[in-house]
Image 1 (cartoon, rainbow, N blue to C red):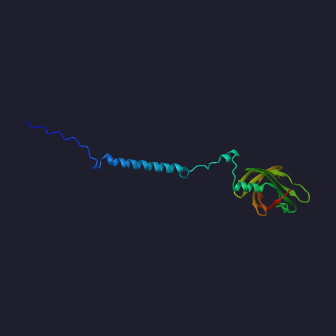
Image 2 (cartoon, rainbow, N blue to C red):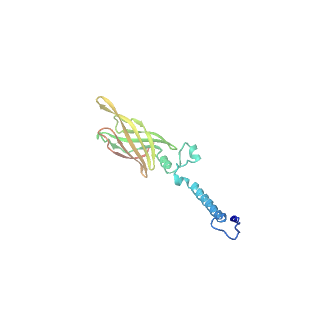
Image 3 (cartoon, rainbow, N blue to C red):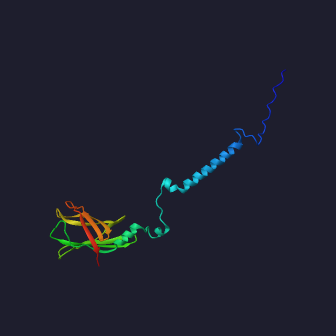
Length: 197
């Protein structure tokens, strides 16, 4: 009977001086390096989250307490519009025999704007009704708003229409542009208003 093959020799412990390719002594620095790298990348992502994924601009606590109004160029521009303004005599675009002055009164409280606008006839006559401004919208260089009115007559009925205003402060006063959406109308009018009492 043939003798059995001797059992394989037990695996010997690697000594500290030798580190074969599959040794845990090589894997440990790699794992530490990967963990460090993932930590650095995670911190960078967290710090730049808004740049990577975008976000709505945050309002400061003071801004939120003030009802959302923010100080800045737009707010400063609105403050310049506050008060009463009057144009020189202008000729009516659709009735050249009539003259008027454009009066604009704006009340600015933070980012809230209200007011009224009117054509004041020269030498008497009809007109001069004041219209409350609607949908005031602060823009970078001033204010846009509109008013609603009616004209007579189409088949005996008053027809509603809107007048659109753009108000821009200048060194000479307020530059105002307006137009309406009346059928057959739409002429662009331009005024330069000065402060009034």
